[in-house]
Amino acid sequence: MLLVLAAELRPQATPVRQADATCARCHASLFRSYLDTPMANASGLAAENLKTATFVHNPSGVTYSVSNGNGKAVLEARDSSTSMPIGKWTLSYFLGSGHLGITYLYSVDHYLFESPVAWYAASRSYDMKPGLGEMRERPPALPMESGCLRCHMSEVQASDRGTINRFQAEAFLHTGITCEMCHGDSSEHVRSAGKAAIVNPARLEAASRDSICISCHLEGDVSVERAGRSALDYRPGELISSYLAYYVRGGASLTARGVSEVEQLSQSTCKRVSGDRMSCTSCHNPHFTPAPTQRAAFFRARCLACHSQAGFAISHHPENPDCTSCHMPRTGAENIPHVAWTDHRILRQPDKRAFAAATSGDELVPIFSPGATTRDLAMAYYKLLLEGERSYEPRAWELLHRQQDAIANDAAGLDALGNLSAERGDNQAAEQAFRRVLTLDPSDLTALSNLGTLLAKQGRLNDSMDLLRKAFGGNRDVSGLAMNLARVECMAGQSEAAHETLRDALVYNPDLKNLRQLNEQLTSCNAPKSR
Image (cartoon, rainbow, N blue to C red; front, side, top):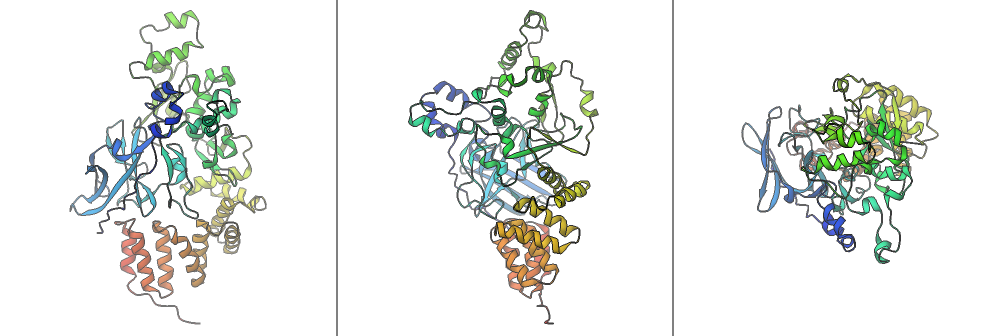
């Protein structure tokens, strides 16, 4: 097995306490209280919030250790039965406030990855990331994409063009959530000593106000970026629905998913009666988090701001001042192990039996997404298909096929149409879609890799290698891409090139069985006979 000590990503991102120091000059009290909030501490340097422990994952036979070595946070993987080293990585940043859990990031040659193990607050221990618990071998390196960073870091940058997780420069400029993430660009406000306006969420129209919270606290069952839009470009004061379309399964339980507070709240009597007057900040102060001993009184005061009748303030369960313990109980979030979730439906008489009884339909319904299009719905079905829900293939295909003219300049839509066409055996339509994508974006990873694979199956090896090598050049950590390229290189008689491709990929996936086995199998590569 190959031992790799990852090249250290020298952290350059500044923490909130430094990034927002200018704001503190005039807003000192808010600044000090904000530094203790989960948002301010949503990420940071790994060494500053390191949970040192050892975790044995029995299904894969891998032992993971997180430790502090000479002031550096380190993740190490070893074979549990032999204690032989598998890999060793310097952890650069943590992600997560710790309220639910913490994961860590590391970098190898400018590729950003997430640790396969995470610290869970409820169990106070490490476990595998969701979806990895039953794997029989160490999982492939987990690419950390910019879209997954944007709600934990500030000023997140797009990855290098044509790549998933390579950042030649910094992936993000600040750790934690800075003031500007909710208040927008403050440069003019600062230069004018506060005379120039800055975004004040409380003074925005309801949809724009709520978009600031929705952008990170709404997930639904699936969300897709609108055509030609990136969620990284969203700025406070805009509508998040201009960038993202959110969908849920009709009839889905509002207590079965994580990050569903916004949609749960929308179903509450409190919100339906109050309308636009009520928002997340009616109960939550984003600049302040009450201490555990203050929590019940803090939120009770929020309830009594509306429920001001004497019966509530004086005689409504005086023995229990914690309104949330009865009306907002914590429930299980089925897609996130080890965590509990607060029920934001604010039920008058919560019935926990109803939590498990709710059933999920299979039709997707848009939520908080005015202007969502047929294309967006098609991409939502397609995204669920990619996540393994095969039953959605006919709907994704029918909607995308019907939208061919509308998505003629939509690279993401054309990639989806090309993939489905190839899966259905229409190679000509697939090639046409992928080539159209490459005229729009010559570096598009999906089009390069999938068209390259398509051409290889047709025996067009040189054309295939050109495309696959271009894709692999910026994505050397993607094991599936490496294997496809190595197979084509071997079919073309380029044995050394095939082995070099696999060796490159093994740098990022040192113990991945499929890569090692293929590297051993390609002992001889014969060039195809000329016709």
